[in-house]
Image (cartoon, rainbow, N blue to C red; front, side, top):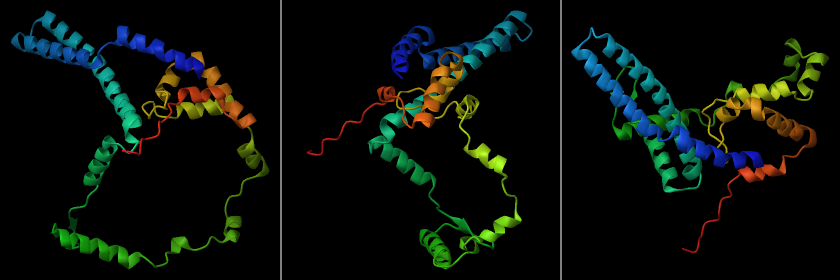
Length: 235
């Protein structure tokens, strides 16, 4: 974990000098592509303009992917930074979600659309009152003897379920995580670990398998966690 913390400074330098302003490069690539298309429209039979248009298109696709990845990662980082701390950003997201999930109308059995607020409220109140307090068949107790009529795990299959995890199991679990999932508090997402697995995969395997064998996480894990400062409640 200490190595990942040190790596952050290296990646910041790499992002500044090699990647640069992703949004600006995307806009430049977009303008270049529009200009190439305009030139080609003026002279559709020009081999030179056709080649420039194709080159500009490839460049736009590349920077579009970078920009899309940047926006996805940025949204995750913003949520980690502002979303879980009862901030204005959190309440704004909550309000937007509430508005998008709000039911303002419904269609009756006769295909009539009801949009009046009082009627919508009365409809849903009546619906839930009709099912609350009633017993459903799905909530009935399970009869244990029914299990004997189905497939039962053999002793060998039961041993497979409790056998220790292997390095292959850990790697498969790691690579099954979506590459654009929210990163941890240290800012490293699953996509990063997949991309550099050949370099750091051994350390990840040792840390995870060590947890299952010893029952404790490496002490260096706390180095990757950003502490939350207590709020001043005296205001």
